[in-house]
Image (cartoon, rainbow, N blue to C red; front, side, top):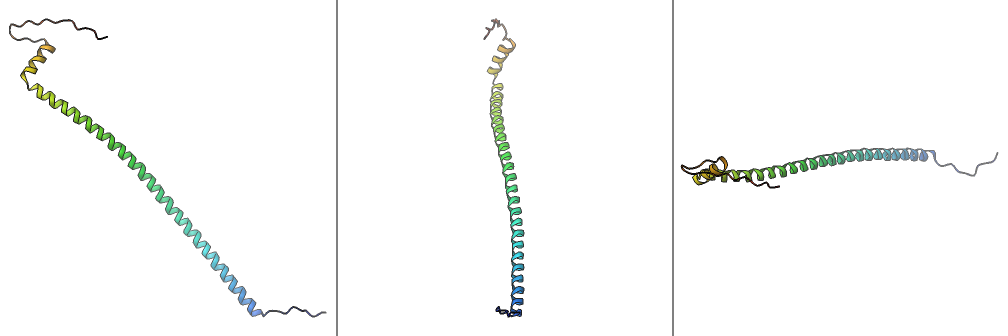
Length: 123
């Protein structure tokens, strides 16, 4: 047999280097696992915030639309109230009441004769 020209490296150095490499690989895998868990947690949190923001913006739009509708109703009711207040004031006026009684109900004063003329068609 021939003698080998390759010298062997010390076995204790190789063993310690393998142990060190295994520990380093284990740390890298654990770091990757932690980063993946953190990324998943972060994605879940962001998606939760986006979901809450979206639902709140939809609810805000509904409330604003309802507010606009109620504001319009308030305006209409205020106009109606103003009109009715004016009618109440007119109904307290005796001249206005007599005018309504004559035109609508054909009432007359003593000795007064009412002639009804036919109304024209507005077609």
